[in-house]
Image 1 (tube, helix red, strand yellow):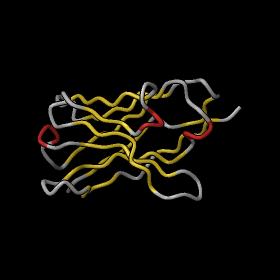
Image 2 (cartoon, rainbow, N blue to C red):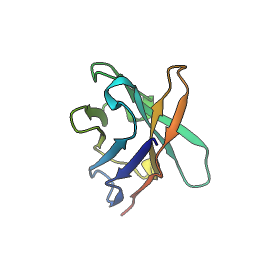
Image 3 (cartoon, rainbow, N blue to C red):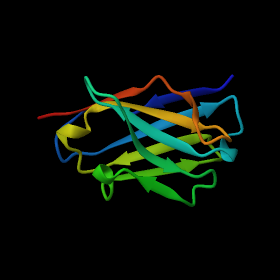
Image 4 (cartoon, one colour):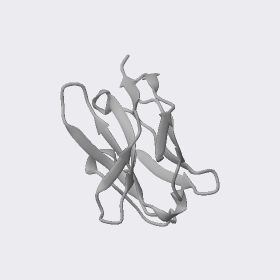
Length: 118
């Protein structure tokens, strides 16, 4: 059974930093691209970032470029999202998600809440 468990969310002041983690199990983590997706209060899902299976290629939505960094440790079956210079508009539940071979996201974690507020 595929399991994705996020951690690291919390309350942070504007300009602060947080590091999210996603522990993966139940599949060969190193074989699949992974993403972070977020959902702000009262809004729809927003794709944030993607990393390929080997960790050599990444991409970001424009609003987080230069502030967020996605990475992975395939030896530890863990995905990360380093978030710097956080803004109130980054407040959301952050989900990690796994890509299927089709290119669609086929597994999601339960999410971790990030609140950016003074």
